[in-house]
Length: 185
Image 1 (tube, rainbow, N blue to C red):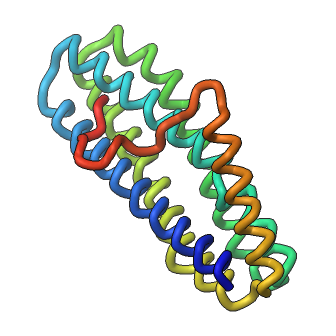
Image 2 (image 1 turned 60 degrees about the vertical axis):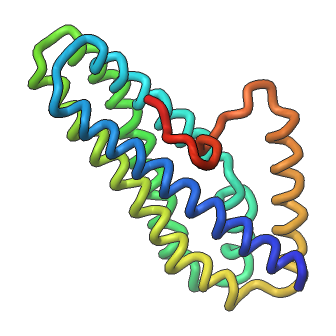
């Protein structure tokens, strides 16, 4: 039971950090959309790269490596929800690839192209926020209902392994800036 509490608390805290990270980036990118200069263009690219690192960390995160497989094994009813979450991940990955490609074209054109790119970044952020909301409001309650104590034990130990591997990793991607510091893009 203790590992179940640990796992749920960890997921809840990470959800809040991730949502805050995305919302801060959105605010800063909206501000860049109202100005037009080379420094702003570089800041937008830095924001896109930061979103890319966020997405990579998210993709390899605890939800997709530990929680989703356990829920899939525990309940056949989870199939549609998990498929929806996987679809959102795939769509987000495609959007991110297109953003990186579009950036190269937009930076050499006029301000309007940069603003269009900012709109695409906003859609990508909305995709990430939609997925986080589905996880929080649908996946976590489902996991609480269908997972056994042994399942939670497995998830909790998976989380601990994940944390340890992240701490040892060569270039640990930060999903959120330290508390009290705004995200920089």
